[in-house]
Amino acid sequence: MKFLFWKYYVSVMLMAIISVAHADEMFSDEAFSYIVIKKLVYSPPNQTPWGAVINTQEEWGQLFGSWQGDFAPQEPAPRFYFEQYQLVTGGFGAKPSGGYSVVVDRVDELGDAIYVSVLDISPGSGCSVSWGFTSPYATILIKKSTKPIKFSITKLVTECAS
Image 1: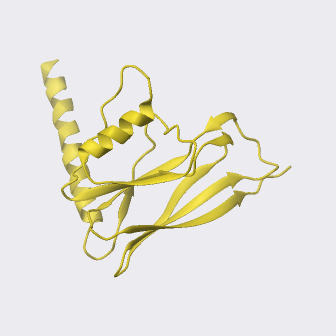
Image 2: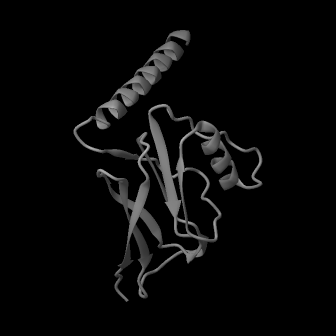
């Protein structure tokens, strides 16, 4: 039994090391890359559009905690290497139903700023959607930079058969 535990433990640790190595390769100097952070358990309950650049674990912990609201117990914010990276997160506020999404299309670093191209996707009139309010958002991890971050937003409507 102990052997199986240690075998499992070692394999998990190797996967974690390989994941970190892969992230470093992805952030090579040849291209300005980003990693999409998978949707977390809780959605931000914001009523208005917003965007934030997170540069420290403390800032991230405060924002992540506000997303959880009064749920008990609150989960700690996932840890990131803020010495080398920063998080960019944002959304377009509360929506009346499902079928809405926010997608980061691309990230470009130019001389004056980092430009984040975002798709604001909404369902068309013939689309079947879930009931209830949603707050779609996206979070990406990028190399740390002192350049300002500017957003380019493209609105798209999903076409569905009636």
